Image (cartoon, rainbow, N blue to C red; front, side, top):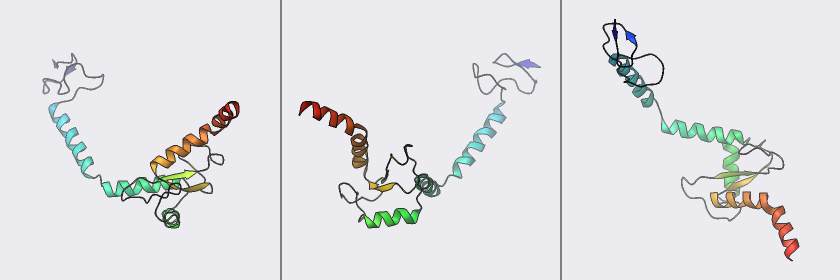
Length: 146
């Protein structure tokens, strides 16, 4: 038995810890174990399919708003492939935001599906959020100043 750089007693075959001195508490690893761990990580990264991941994210996002891909496509077509608020046409790969009535479903980025009002671009979605949250304050301010 010999002592490694971390100060732990290890079998004689392993003369040092490959993780180096000062690593977080846990088991020390031999150079062979560290190499095997890196190879497992590389293999997992190769399994990643960006197209499938994008498709999954979109389906997950639509599901949170109570929509299917067909519902989304129908809304997009009914709006003329443009923002429902400013009527600016959506560009290719532009993020499209789903607007819903927070009086029905107050949760952020979640809806029952019945209260979805339209599809917006980023600017209109942000503006509408500010207007809805601050409209009472604006009315009160204007009533005192007018």
